[in-house]
Length: 352
Ligand SMILES: Cc1cc2nc3c(=O)[nH]c(=O)nc-3n(C[C@H](O)[C@H](O)[C@H](O)COP(=O)(O)OP(=O)(O)OC[C@H]3O[C@@H](n4cnc5c(N)ncnc54)[C@H](O)[C@@H]3O)c2cc1C
Image (tube, rainbow, N blue to C red; front, top):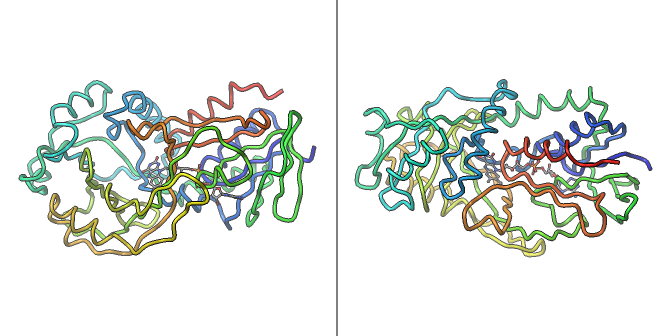
């Protein structure tokens, strides 16, 4: 064996998986990514929302788990948390949940939720928005997370290989053979933490995935929306909130953020034209001040969800030893705070 473990993918999940394996006693841990730095893909290109349950009225399990992980994530990553904004969940008149149902759901999961003060309520078009609740949600700074992780990986003795395209060549009961750039390596364990590439690195997955090409618009908010994050629930609506890594706001829309959806690795569509203007135009019907935002550009990446979670929008983790070998494990986090669920599973696994 050349390594105890190879982790493919140095996003937020791959970095933490590598650190956890070292804590669990593996000496030679290699972490490889095709990018030039840490957290360059989905861990950076996302809405930067630390979920606190509100998003999941259709999956009480995910909501409750988000509540638990929220506290821990904010405590462990205080250096990367932006909390200096009012977070409003507004309920559209044609929402799948009513204002009453949303308030009841928040009470059930113990998530702070109260009527917005009048100056915030006035931001919304009353013809289209039934209620606006002041909630507790924060944003994370992915650049700060990456800057924190780099020295931790180095101090942890992890063999970090960037610019390194990695694939699995073979896996059996005793270990996994991988191609890392020009090197070939045999490892006792291998971890596929490649998110959007989960089904393309040479590991068959049993669990079907759904992929979406997603656009996140970046905007400079008008003065009326500075210090404010808004999510309009529950249906084909939108969200705008601070994006700390770029000191601006993100804007996403349930209808316009996904450009295309597909299932097989081979079906990836080519990128289409930006839909940021459509996001702004539709969002401004509900939140008129949005029409005065300035578009700064867009980020694109592939979003991955478990097909079985589509109906209720749940976000369980995937931890799947491959059929070919129990030593080749694919991991999908789903959302950033799910890292604790992954670390728990790693801790209780038998690594002998
Ligand atoms: C549009 C969008 C919005 C989202 N919004 C939120 C949100 O607001 N809050 C939240 O909690 N979560 C959100 N998520 C989900 C969250 O971003 C992901 O759950 C999380 O970032 C996944 O981290 P990861 O480390 O698994 O993946 P990534 O950060 O994508 O890391 C995977 C890494 O694998 C590398 N890689 C892939 N293939 C190979 C290969 N063959 N060889 C070498 N390296 C390889 C890639 O370069 C990449 O660096 C969002 C996701 C998207 C896409």
